[in-house]
Length: 251
Image (cartoon, rainbow, N blue to C red; front, top):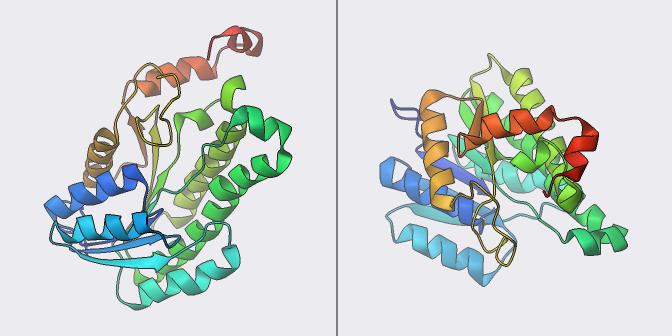
């Protein structure tokens, strides 16, 4: 169960090598979390991440999980919930892709879409049903400001995040009143391995800053969290720009 401040004692991370997810796990372990499940493809990086979290005092397990294999999600994730209640699920997997390559190679574009959207829909619904069955818990979904309005520079990634964001909002509405809390997190440009080498955008942030925002959102039972918070205003303005004007912006 969550503590009096709304923080989880047990955490399931979908995307167990995500830098944002691991920063969030470290922060929560420093507060209250004692059991962590890291779900991802088997790799030395996944085992290393588990070892680091164990070093912080948590009981950490790894789970073989593939976003691109929805047929396995029910069985794989069901085993985690069968071990006991899960207070929080952090859905943090995703692909940025390479816009220029993905436009030339539609199969690569489809892989981005299937990972970021289809895989998330499958895993999100499986976890939501399990959380609803236990009567409590939070599903935290890592979206992106890229989903607010698709830009020419990354519209394939942005469109997949737009779908994920809409799905998570609808799921939150569907679960309202069941004891399950859905929180959508919309970071801007985050300095991680995934974005290394890309031109840094204004209002860039860090995995640690996203983790802090997630914690605050959990305490407040927020439905939407922007990181940094000023992006809410920026994106509200960009969202309402005429298309012809938006098309000419250097974004």
